[in-house]
Image (cartoon, rainbow, N blue to C red; front, side, top):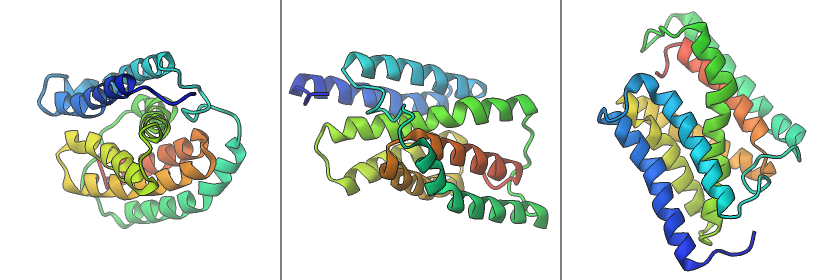
Length: 202
């Protein structure tokens, strides 16, 4: 994709604000029913994909590719296993901040749709967009990770915000190594399920 014109950058910036800030705030303040949060996120991702394709972004730029898929999985696998074991140990110990009440259908949705969608939005799309603004690596990382943490404001829980920011930094770093969403999507699904079942985060 060629460099973007100033007008296109402004429009894209406003669109990003609408989706990445407006959508979480709409859920937080009840404009969108909290029970439909994942559906709203999924629909938002479809809209984002369509808009970014119209702006000329390729699937490769958005992290949707088979290139480096195996490498992306191997790169993040050890850390995912370690964190999953810690989460399971916490679960076995009986510690739980939140009593999980999700059905199996939720976990199927979370694993196969929600996790890949979140990684697409917060690693693939945001990184592709922020690169067009010629921002330094550290600035892109902070913006991307902060917005990923911000979407969890809907749970009104400070620990969830903190933990998602920390893991967001890790997933951002891992995604940068391969520019493939496969590894971080799998890691997201595994760690998300473990922490939800263990009652660590909502």
